[in-house]
Image (cartoon, rainbow, N blue to C red; front, top):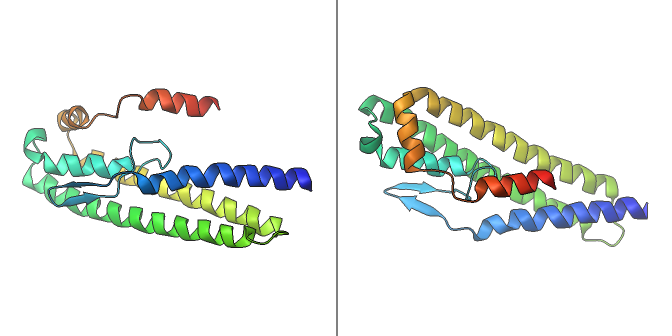
Length: 170
């Protein structure tokens, strides 16, 4: 029982501070396209970076060569994506608070704590899947040339791939 408790405490103590780091990350606001982005794609929060790319795409519609019709299609996708991000972050934060409530007592219920940790992981996975769906939808609106221009305007931040490899090895 002690080994299981120690393992659970380790998992929880490792997971929650990493997520909490996201709260201190800077928010971006580009010409009316506020973003709840969290840094490089797949780093900690995952697909939240997609909102930054979408905002940059809309902000640079002329440079990318978007038509008015494409902007009309992309704008509601971007808004919906931002709403999903806000809801997801709030739901995960609440689930983390519930986990802390469970663990507040000395002899907490291990089954409840384990279920709460799994719930948080499932919520994060569901959010990533939703962001992938949005990304797929956005890319279907762009031509190959526009997609390449967008990638040049908003590349992944340097060091992200190296960090991803390090995280994968752990």
